[in-house]
Length: 57
Image (cartoon, rainbow, N blue to C red):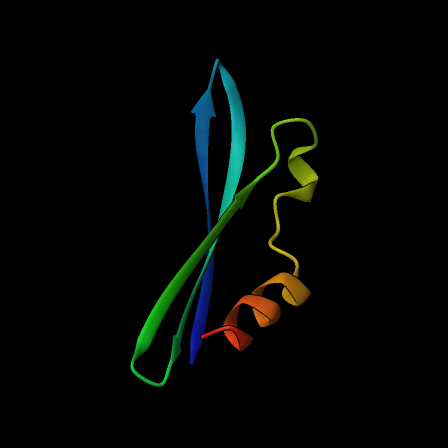
């Protein structure tokens, strides 16, 4: 089970989107977050990264 959401924060007067993905895998709950202050359109967490980390649990 997983849920993802995005919030917008303000850092140094700039609006910066921050993405979160929270995953439950068996008895473990894992949270991932991502932001990109150089290119706010690239704040997403790559699915391959999430899958690779979950494979390590």
